[in-house]
Length: 380
Image (cartoon, rainbow, N blue to C red; front, side, top):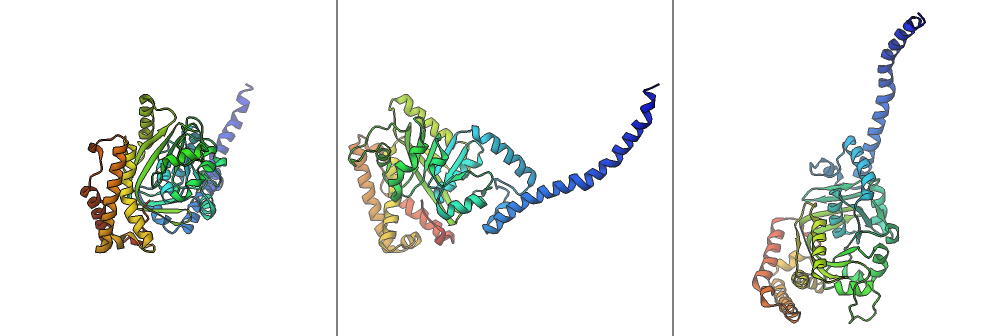
């Protein structure tokens, strides 16, 4: 009988629950949900206001972070909790080149990518996020997900260092890289010129420029050759307008037995395998790979500087400058082949003459004729 006494109260309880559910949903749950959604939408709106092209970025079906709150919330939680356990990659020299390839690695969600930046680029990116607009799909890294530091000491030791400094900044190698390196770390130098011996010398503290010491500070140093038209058009905003092919080759390693060389090759190939938007190639012949890029850099960079900073389209479309570019290409190829010969390579791997120079100039001329990006182009 005592249980039957509680039945009326049970009916009253269920009645109140039925009445209260729509009230709680209408006046508490829905307003809170609306507030949260608009809060995160406002984050994207602020970024859109600071980077003029972000409105187009969010409409692009290929964009890595969409404006949809549910997707953003899910991505934020998964990235913040899981990236700490992923291989760490430091992007040193996060300008037009470093930001592009760093963002491509970040969008795979397979790496913990950390950017080293300076000055206004650092301040804006840290506050507003990193915006990479690209012909192959835009990428936006929101500020509360982005990892960016203005010192490499703040980053700490990593598995990979992507070094994308200007060649004139190579003197800072030791200061910037040593805080990032363990014995098993690997360095990829996406830089112009034959700089890799200098990088090893600077890492090891060797003052004699004619001496290349044994590598002990990390496991391997790779050469990186980028054929990329990319420009930092504003702090926190990089625009990629053409090409993107990246070639890498092992320059030196702490051990040189065949098994370890093959292991380093596989590690580099595995690093870029998940990426999209550009072609990656591994070249077993480091010397040939570096000289091949010099066939591009020496004529166009040299003539541009000598002619008071003229743009590359003027070199390609001017008959006299074009002829000069061909001459420098031929001389570069001759020096490259002599270097290969001295290092013990046969003519089977020598650089060709006409096919290399014509392909470079013809492809570039066609690109400039067909597009209107003249003033945006910065090659590497």
